[in-house]
Amino acid sequence: MSLLEIKGLHIAVDGTEIVKGIDLTIEEGQVHAIMGPNGSGKSTLVSTLMGHPGYEVTGGSVQFLDKDLLAMESHERALAGLFLAFQYPKEIAGVSLRSFLFAAYKAQMKARHPEMKVASPIKFKTLLDEKMQGLKMDTAFAERFVNQGFSGGEKKKAEVLQMHVLQPLLAMLDETDSGLDVDALKIVAEGINAMRSDRFSALVVTHYARILEHIHPDHVHVMVDGKIVGSGGKDFAKQLEEGGYEKYLQK
Image (cartoon, rainbow, N blue to C red; front, side, top):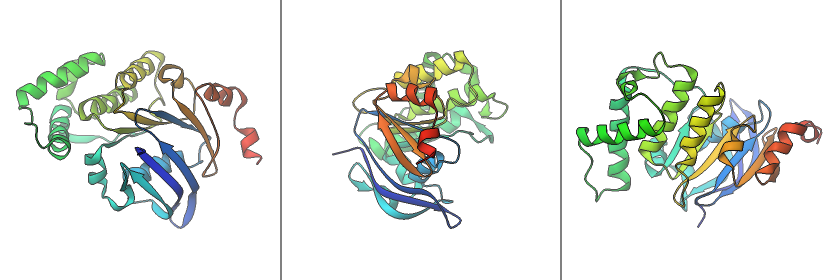
């Protein structure tokens, strides 16, 4: 059984077709990357998989753990083990990062591990502190309001921290590397690599191969004009960065 199986997926926004027939299969433990120029439909794809209401699926199917993903509400997809790291994370005024993560953690535990006792606030603090130290984040950071006043790099680290706390089965990373300096990029990549196991898969959306030099995906796909027009192994990303997308745009 595949973790995620997409067949003939078509997606429209305000009546305009953006994704034009995508086929993609992700097995458990695999990391896939999708590269491509702006406007090719990469972010539309992952946002739709997460259940964004602004996108309309006009054809095709998506199975997640052999269940109809498209029939689920957004929160049901999250509770089933799907996670989306945003390109532009939203600010949540008045809610500390710790409170936000504790609420999400409790919901995940009840949904995916109902037989287990949910950690107390004190035990969760210990867990969160360990995760933050592993990502080289100051633990005092957890007391700040979610993403409010965070730098671009801090927002991306906070997204990776959420991923470590929630332990998703499939993490979709929408240009998490954008706007990061070299040091922050390495920390984010290390955070993703630390998750790798037979029970964790990822779909990384990016313009550039630099983060893939640290993550080492199993499969790399190039997306142009709403379609996957080429695929390869981890070295394919470097070929795309060196050669660009021009030959695919001409097809």
